Structures are given as C-alpha cells and as structure tokens.
Amino acid sequence: MDIVYNVNQSGLSFHSDEYISPNKWLQLYIPINENFFYAYAQVRWCKNLPSNSPNNTHFRVGVSFCSSDDAFSARMVEQVCHIEEYKKRVAKFEGRILNSDQAATEWITQYADSFPSFTH
Image (cartoon, rainbow, N blue to C red; front, side, top):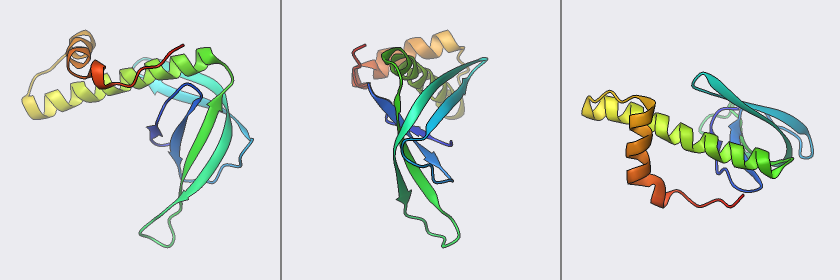
C-alpha cells in the first residue's frame, strides 16, 4: 500500500502496485508517528490506473472495514496524517518548527471546518 485516499464510514481506498482480488481479506497496517493503526478489511474493488509507462501497472483498491470502530479509528489516523503533513509544510515554506500539539491546534483552526464530517 502506498497512498491512502478517501477514508469514510465504510472503508478507504489506496494505491497499490499489485492487483488485489475483490473479497480478499487484508490486515491493514498504517504507521503513524510512534504508534500504528491496524484493522481487518475486505477488498471491494480493484481498478487499474492509467500509467505513462507500458511496464508499470498501478491500481486503486477499495476496502471496507469489519467494524464501525475500525472505520472511526482510520478516520482519526487520516486527521493525524493531515496534521503531520501540515507540520512539514510549515517547516519547509515558513521555516517554523512546530511540535505535534502546536501543529494540531493550527491545523484544526485552519482546516477542521473543511474536513468532511464523520458520524460514528
């Protein structure tokens, strides 16, 4: 798994270099800072993505979670990822070094309203 997209109530989608058959069960593992998120999910679809190279194949894979608790946890992981990316952007473009709490406070103030809501 490379890049995670579209975390929602039922699951998420991600980029893969390999085709993964629908209905296959996966254990997802997403490292985040010193912690990690893991959950079981079932593949619902796998679509071939266009590539500029004939030897390269890429896929977008959609999975659904086994439980609403896993879906909610994945949503929290998504927010943490956005905050960590914000922290990196601020350091690169503004030269400010933020700790995780400072970055979270700024990100929430600036972007939480545009982050799609999720009901557990």
